Image: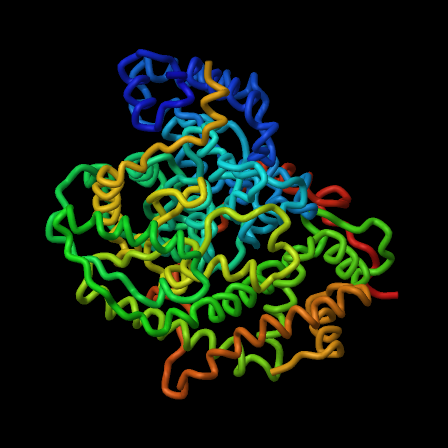
Length: 492
Length: 97
């Protein structure tokens, strides 16, 4: 086994037992990137090799001196390119921020740095995290490692593709309406959107502030818990970060799940779902019964309205958040403008790509005088109903199981000209964002040779038991650490 | 509800975006498709439903009202990001004629 093939927990063990050094591990990944990145293109920006290896050597020294005992010390990873890294380009895959060097680190970056992880690069994404295919990156497409004619999903498509292709041991993504879970599903990896407020958003470039959350993208459930252990926790710089006792998610892994109660909402298996995806997910649900878990049908009657509410709330918040891109303090500026007002218009029209403009427009429209009551306010009311559906369901069930995405990975260019069809990718993922509850996608099988994801949604701050359940299910399904075949050619 | 090209022009103005004729027509067409889908929630009786803006009970988070000075190096890093500057200031084109 090549070192880059090791999961986070395997690599952590090997590092602790001194079977391998951080430097050796990092060079194995650097080599792997050289081999497969030209096919995948999951990075927006790769760090200089010398810089990576110097950092790995430093972590080795600290470990030998007993000064860093974190489990993640020496583990190579990538960050979605909307998380600020001091002095390292953070572009949001936008022309607007193409040359932006943040003067500070995001909270999650500080946490991972402190734990001794090794940053290999920033991962590609849809511009400003708006999209479901990573085709909205201003720089280049990212390809799905399972079939390079297909998209990796989005908006954290780079983060998911890099983990699937074994170019990093894990990555972080951000999820506003499914942007971690949907690409995780399409790339056959594990992606968690934590409870709103569990992980600080300080230094995450804002899309829709009441929905955005950062979470791990990993090869398996145990790795997910290990990464969450490091990034979760209160931070006073994000006023929505919740101050509560720190939990150790990895301690939940391996515990018995007999007696858990799971609801399967029929509304999530009805419209627009690929029958192959539906069957694969339902087969996995059947497996739960072998694990002595109670499975029952449940109704979440308002879920068919979640997508509409989501696209109004998210675009409204985005139109406000993206008003800051005016060409004055940082980022792109049109140099020809002769007045300030002309500068605003030209800078914004030239700096933003088509999907970002579309969403700013839609959000501005639903907030504008005369339409606020008809659209934005109604969306907020629907949000209340969606929350109510979850609250009702969680009175009787520990978890909700649904498909993550209605389809497997689709072809590049297949949906890009039709925004509504593209938005429908998020039909199963947006309810959890609107309700603020945690949700994770795990691979549960294949359809047409492409991975299918299953979504588990839990109660607020119940990530520990949720991952405990997912781990048991993952073991029972035997769909774990799955690796696309081109990887096999790549190794020895 | 339908949106016409005049409204699209108005919204673009509010958002400080210049749109080409082609973009105006494309967005008008696309918004109508998207809004038609969104209008489905008119099936719901929302009269007595309270809106949710945030999922958590939010309270004001205040810090002590004390000036904190930043490193000089940081100030320079911030200003270096500016598209145009003069000394310690951001430079912009004239606001008034």
